[in-house]
Amino acid sequence: MKNQNQDEMSPMSSLEDWDNDVLKRYPEPGKPAKSKEEYRNYDSPEIDGVREFYRLNHKYQTYDNVLAKKANFLQFDKKEMPWWSAMEYLNTLIDDSDPDTQLDQLQHLLQTAEAIRADGYPDWFILTGFIHDLGKVLCLFGEPQWNVVGDSFPVGCKFSDKIVYPEFFAANPDIHDERFNTQYGVYSHQCGLDNVHMSWGHDEYLYHLVKDYLPEPALYMIRYHSFYSQHREHAYDHLLNGHDQEMFKWVDKFNPYDLYSKSPVAPVVSELKPYYEDLIAKYLPSTVKL
Ligand SMILES: [Fe+2]
Ligand SMILES: [Fe+2]
Image (cartoon, rainbow, N blue to C red):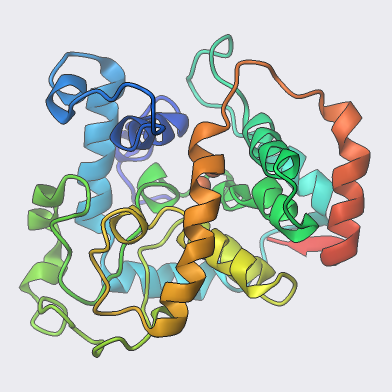
């Protein structure tokens, strides 16, 4: 992004720093949790980077930002390639993280999918696990981290104080716009999430990319997997309709696989590739337009 200050592009040394922050916020049940104070109040470059990332995300994720990003990226006119090549393309996303301790994107996707597969779920659910973060290719198209990852939330209405670091919304111009700063903003009571604009990022982008090909529960998992203020805190029950609430049971089912499937043992890509190529061929067109 040409007019974006370079310091604001990548405050985190790795996109995974955000995922790790979410994991600290929502630790695996049964595993010891660190208190909020414990994990935020010590000096570490990762924590400062994540904090700065949230500051930028909450400042710049406005209603107009979302409309502008949709107008650009939902054209899908950037690149076209076979699906597996797109997964490898995502893996060219190299950041400043330590390669010895950090799994790459493809490994996270395979671990998520393999954990779902091991629990005997239908194949479209496994495929969903495999592709759920492909939208992070937005980084490769020059988008800053704050427009690719982070907790997602509705824009066009009041920001919930259940969203992480709610104080950073003080710098978002939408809070001074009376169209957007009431509980319902441009929406109405239980109007349904299909009528709600979510903050821009890899979730919303991938949803539009695959919405004609996967069953509806898969689409909910993809579109709302970072909407923690709803699926963990129920902050937007006034916007969800009954159908959304039903479908969010699938989002809840998916979330632990995303957060808790990380293992230091890297999957062997060459062994798994034929299985995932078959899954792709069953549900998706031969090429993907990014
Ligand atoms: Fe994600
Ligand atoms: Fe993920």
